[in-house]
Image (cartoon, rainbow, N blue to C red; front, side):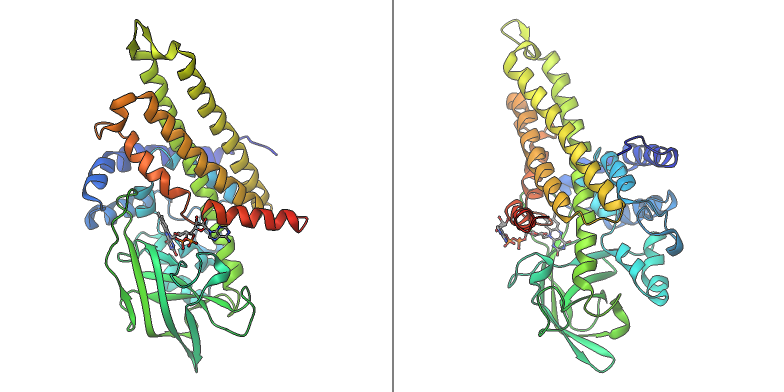
Length: 382
Ligand SMILES: Cc1cc2nc3c(=O)[nH]c(=O)nc-3n(C[C@H](O)[C@H](O)[C@H](O)COP(=O)(O)OP(=O)(O)OC[C@H]3O[C@@H](n4cnc5c(N)ncnc54)[C@H](O)[C@@H]3O)c2cc1C
């Protein structure tokens, strides 16, 4: 496995770094305190991101994108890890990349406006009556001539109230097995029968708007199915594996930031006549965090590399998602501990990342659920 960064990716990485430092980071505190990204700010940042090509990273060149593989995207997502996740998720819409599998008409109507920063999207998978995994979807899509009728409810749809359209995973064939009867639909905001619920308040990740989408006899044209009818499981699983890898890379980037802060603080904070950096207890926390980060980066790059070769990597992605998010939780805890009482205050950002870290072990598949996936693969000999 070659870990050198290709020149075009390095140029892009510098672009991301500049965008994050100059455009996103100044808004971190405001977004945290308001618990939302103001609409005008969201729109202007998205437009700037589009101008820099940051919205087209993983979209194939033939669809107007930059065509970067997932390894290159993971490297860039590590750099997005210099700023809070809600800002990143608020600017880079989710799900529109799936339209690369759609028709030309779908790409013109939905993908192109996302690439230019004029539209934004969300992904609706999680439900109350079923698990959050792709194969447990209960929301039904009943065929009615040239249309499908969607009935059911999706929960925790990130930024579902500001997205122009949602990519919705629904059960289009109840007789087919759990993994074969699913399809992905594009549903426009404001479609009759699609209701957007109130935002839920959460412990952390302030600035991500979590809403419910209720589908009550919502009529969607058959032309809004992405890819083949019945191909939804494979499409969504592949997309979510990429999302898990990007999230893991973000954890590495943000983890570096927290470790740097803890290191600097340990050098300047004196107790009993010595900087705490000279105490073995503190040194071990720093050493464990640095080791954790190195291990996560290697795991993330390896899983991304495997996936970018077109090989099946669901097990490796599950492993890195579990490891990265649990690592990030340990690391925020240590960084806060090294800062003592100051780390617990809102004057610094450690308490915020501590709260945000808690949810990452749940988002896009809980650690326990992913461990089940991993053991299923191992037991099957994969
Ligand atoms: C920031 C954020 C953004 C999100 N964005 C979206 C979004 O845009 N779209 C969307 O659809 N959803 C989104 N979600 C929802 C998220 O993906 C789910 O909350 C998550 O996948 C867990 O599903 P759940 O809440 O239904 O928990 P459950 O699946 O009910 O899990 C509850 C507990 O049981 C465990 N568990 C579940 N299944 C198994 C199993 N098979 N074996 C062992 N243990 C198991 C879990 O690990 C967890 O501990 C988002 C959540 C967050 C926090």
